[in-house]
Image 1 (cartoon, rainbow, N blue to C red):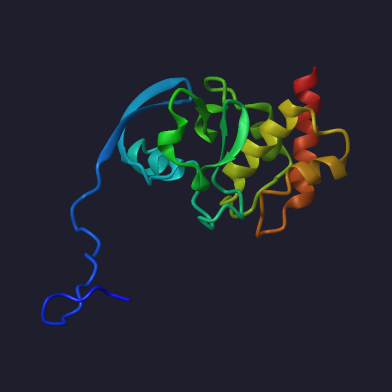
Image 2: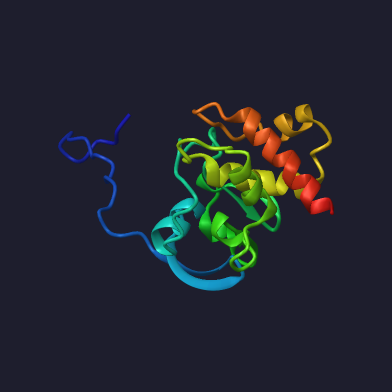
Length: 177
């Protein structure tokens, strides 16, 4: 029940303020470089990467953590950047799809995706590649079923799953050499 003012009129609760929210000045270490950015506390890592740092390889798919298009590595672990706040990533090493190549040489996962034609529209590819890099580094490539299980958080609407699995297996063999 709303409190009554003198004379019986109800007081409405104050509405949302139109004033801008305070920004936090943070340092994000992305692909080996430190970037200073000012972000509101509610800004996701995905939006900070794409809009503040102009690293547009990471894709905004569902914006709910369901499709995996926004997958990046944080301290070597897979993270759905649409569900992660940028302010929580200070002092961590963030790797995006732009950072997995070694200079001009593609990462073995990237090479395998090209060789196996593991993409059609390419929208999911950055997230698939980042998840595949982690899958290989974690050693979850013992069988096709294991790869499918560990890559299950990344959706491909084109249905390139068999080629993706083959690419992950190829990359794992290349990395083990």
